[in-house]
Amino acid sequence: MSLKQLGWNTYFDALWQGREHLEWLPARVISQQRGLWRIAGDFAECWAEVSGTLRAGAETGGDWPAVGDWVAAEMLSGGGRPLIHKVLPRRSKFVRKVAGRRMEEQVIAANVDTAFVVMALDGDFNVRRLERYLAQSFESGAKSIVVLNKADDCGDVAACVAEVESIAAGAPIFSVSARTGDGVDALDRFLAPGRTIVLLGSSGVGKSTLVNHFLRRDAQVVQAVRASDSRGRHTTTSRELFALPRGALLIDTPGLRELQLWDAAEGVEHAFSDIEELAALCKYGNCGHTTEPGCAVQAAIAEGRLDQNRLENQRKLEREQEFVRRKVDPAAQKQEKERVKLLHRGAREKYDQRRKDGGKG
Image 1 (spheres, rainbow, N blue to C red):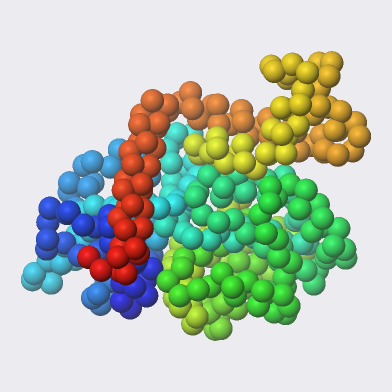
Image 2 (cartoon, one colour):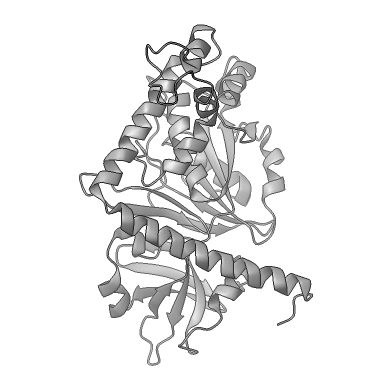
């Protein structure tokens, strides 16, 4: 595949300009396993290792290459594995806290244009879990789309869609059945050539079946969920980028039993923007939305316009974010975010100028 087919465009080209090592080549990470990353570009696909410099400078898991990343690679003479020297600044990233007690970021997918947040309409349907996924998806910088799969297993699709609309913060919603193909074609509008899509969701929501539908072949193993509770089994065990027949790129991710948020304060605020709007109408600016007089949030709950469980879930996610903030260096996080914003701003300016110049330069 060429760089353009892999999603390279003038935006990333602007980030690439001015590099010190002219012998390095741009490449995209299309899969990974322990200690190795499979890369593709204007050369044959191959497995690569990270350089000693990158290994020494990687302070956290978020610094390591991830599927979807654009990297600077060096092709070694003599048949050795290529070396990844640098990860280009990510235009977007979907992350979570690593499993266990370590306070560390794990990048699940990078440089994604559109995130399909998949929820099953069977016995495992859970809007509280969907709120969690949407918060991290909004934080990622990608466009968020809610895909309600297994519509053929749902007795009242319209009611479920209405419930999701009340918590989706304006994200488009599609009800589909990957098993029968019903409604899936409506997602084709997001599969433009060179665009990168990621499938996110818990085990058993049908992501592997969706992948097979988009690829028009059985690339992923599909297993049935448990009949007792509709919970899924892990059929996808690694992250991988696929080239779709229509020219889009699709990243499939393993199902997550629980998504622990990481540095998603803005995403949480976006996901619960309806509550923030109500809070602005409270009588007191420091209202805790419990028993205070003139609380617009509690009034909405009393009138049935807001679910008490949604408010409790917002508080839970905010507590998680506060815990993460205390455990990591907030000043360093803010500095890194500002650095990346400046890089992206410069790339956008170069990108816009090239468009004005007709793509020259």
